[in-house]
Image (cartoon, rainbow, N blue to C red; front, top):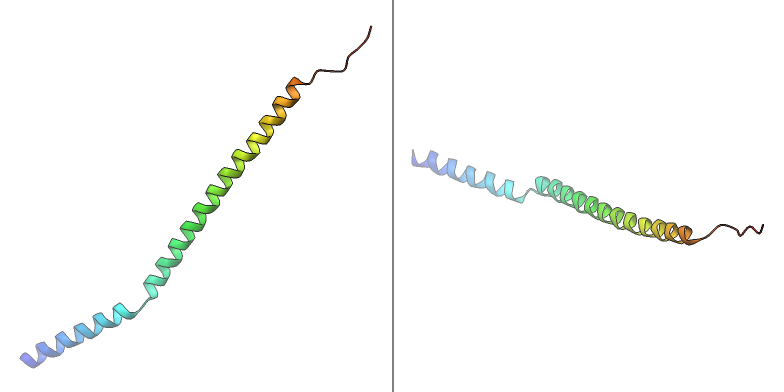
Amino acid sequence: MFLALYVKAQTFMADMRGKMRREDGAVATEYALLLVLIALAIIAAAAALGVAIAAVFNRGSSTLSTVTGPATGS
């Protein structure tokens, strides 16, 4: 009776140690985290680029609005 309980406990502990050593789940989690961080970096870069492009167009628009047409002499 005690021998069977001891064997089950040892088997359980060996299984737990084996599961702790495997890194299959951890590797997938790390890849998912890396993918999320890269996506956030791309979103931040696109937002910054959008702001910079909007500033260029606003500056060009204000410059063009101050230009007067050609002088016509009559």
